[in-house]
Length: 117
Length: 114
Image 1 (cartoon, rainbow over the protein chains, first blue to last red):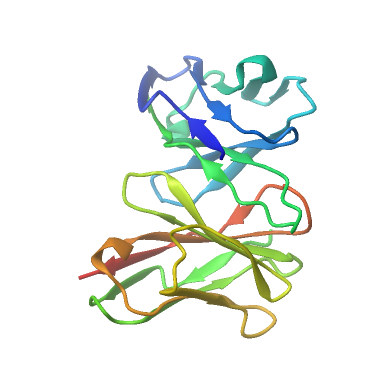
Image 2 (cartoon, rainbow over the protein chains, first blue to last red):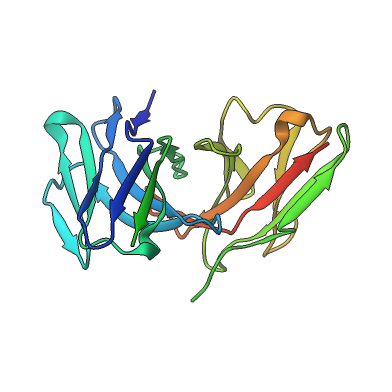
């Protein structure tokens, strides 16, 4: 079974601070995919990033960066120079490779990020 | 930019009533999903659908639930006899093809069962 753990339930930062959201996952699959989604107060789920299990290269995209470490089963997400508009719930999600083609996402419980002025 | 749409945005129904939640996935997508999120909790997978049949379903998706793609654009979730515990936000999602890709979510339908 797959499991995603986001131990941080809520984080509060002051604008312009960097913030890292932690994600730890469990899976028996040798190939899998990890995602981060953002859920702003309006409620929709917005895709942010995807990483596959066979590529541990960490990347930066604008103010977002992520640190994937297979050895510790972690997929942490960092927002640099946070802004008030970053205030949202952030979900880490995991997907295996299903032979039928469909790939359900297993979500963590989310981290509420509050960015204050 | 193409997006997934869902109607209605909010549905209030009485316990025991049938509800149908509607979704229009992105037009060239082939895989469709329903998820639900009970208020303040995590998003949970319900069912995935491809080529006019269910490809995977969760334990939540029991006989009270069904999905259908009645035409070339709509994708529906039916709950036959709603219970109080069905109150949640229901999200539809779609992906363009095979393999684990990012799923594009609709804005959700908030279902309130009274």
